[in-house]
Image (cartoon, rainbow, N blue to C red; front, side, top):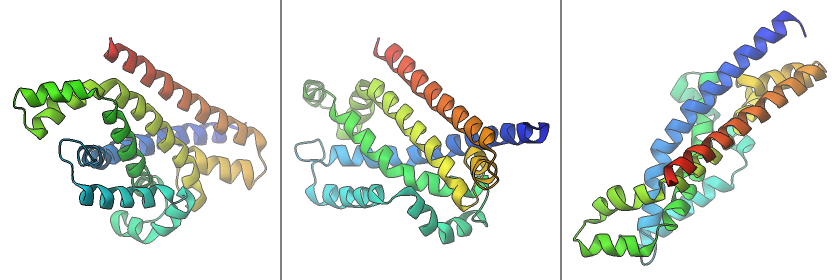
Length: 216
């Protein structure tokens, strides 16, 4: 590969990491409270509310059911409104975030559901409010599972970032498409795919190690 291609791939790695980081942070900023709401308002939970749970769950399920490529296209007007453009690394963060929010919400709900009812009963017997229980009992107890879920979610966002190249997003996905597919440079295609696989593996293993240490 030429020096230009190597530099392009280096830039693509940086852009992919930027998209993954910012989209993951923003997705958790929105998805974490939604996941907590889904958990807390479920039947038999501390803030049981069937109406709120059904409406929130329906919205999350609809958002999750949309294929990411379709979501990319549907969000082009919104992306252009938010960032001033529908192409590039910065613009790709918008659909990546929106696509990850429902996944984060369901993952958080699942992690919190693993908390032993005995811990919640003990907190309630001490007179803890629902908010206090969530912050000081449920979330800390669910931390290892939440960290494992975070590793999976970040890996998902990383995979989505590769698809963003279809509509002009930056990163390794765009390089694989432009050079590996359109220009038939297979060495570029396989190089970018290999780098993406390694990045996913590092994120997964890092998440597993952190979760194990937290559990101990």
